[in-house]
Length: 123
Length: 106
Image (tube, each protein chain N blue to C red):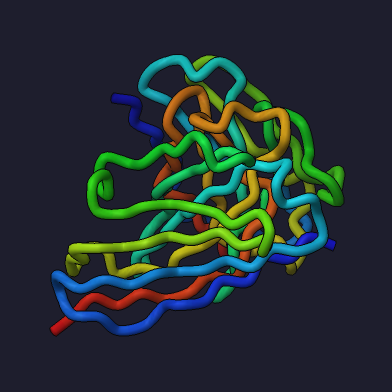
């Protein structure tokens, strides 16, 4: 059974940093691209970033480019999102999502999702 | 830049009735369209990909159709567990979600 468990969310001041983690199990982690998708309170879904199975290719939404960094440790079956220079508009639940194997990493859809971790940016 | 528009924003349906949800892309996305269901406090769940292929474990009452710019998700006979918010997402290029349709009990 595929399981994705996010952690690392919390309250941070504007301009601050936070690192999210997503522990994966139930599939061969290194064989699949992964992604982060966020949802502001009461709002819709917004794709944030994606990374290839090897970690060699990464992609970002314009709204986070230059501030967020996606990475993965395939030896630990863990996906990360380093978030710097956080803004109030980054407040959201952040979901880790698995990308199906045959999908182009730069244009994915998502077949499994974690339960999410809440990031609140406020002074 | 592609814009994904879902309609209606809210759909009121009685259990057992048919629900038809629409998703429109501002330019062609071919068949690179997925549908998700999200219940309150839960993560989204993949229902449909490739515009019309049901994901693993999704009941046959869910069906998707369309290509290019016009897409439809049909729930043939609404069950109590189907009342939720539904999102479409294009993946022809950068992933982009529609604003969602809330299916509520009439």
